[in-house]
Image 1 (spheres, rainbow, N blue to C red):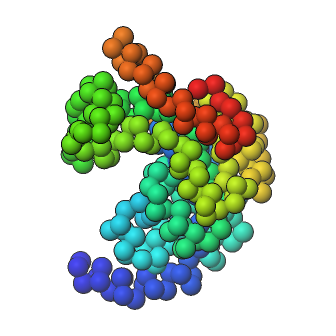
Image 2: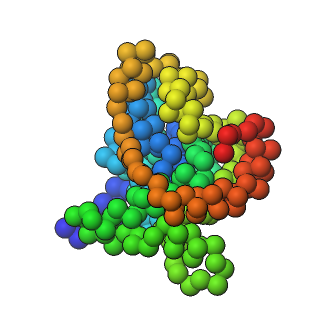
Length: 275
């Protein structure tokens, strides 16, 4: 098996940049903001072809995978012959977060189009904590190892404390919500018209118009009304939770904390959200 992997690495991967398609666009974030839903919807579009089993390749955000080279990355995408005129893509909600990634994307993929869904950073932080906190009860070992056993208040207090030695990765509940910094970083490498910014709340409340916006951005046909109606019946990665009174106080604290970052974001985008 090891010998076969070595042969693939030496012989097959170098050929892939010639015969494999590069992604036409990327969904780059953010975590806990309906990226799974958007991926599932787009994967069903008749003008889009997805061949990899997972929505994420973990290429640009994982140094170990990135060191495998572009050929390894392209192994996840369809051949140029099989793809034809269709579009292909991946959806990695961590791509917007790590500061080195836009440079790597520009370097390897050129001026590619990207899509990002922004969610109220307070709600996003709480949703992410709920997700990681639930991992401790799951049967999958790799998820249990990433479980956050702290209370929400403990997690936020430690992230806000500059003297805390508690590791923030992979949670980063606060820094992941500083969207203005992340978008400004991408704008250093890509023109604004190459990055479609969607609102999580609007995506949920006005799914049809939001998906039409995506299709227009990608220059593909809009989804049929029948497809939109079916999508509205489907829920992917949906989570419901009850906010305790203690957590409510922490959320209010976060709202005040994020306020100046959100104001800068509104100025950058030229419009406001009701955050």
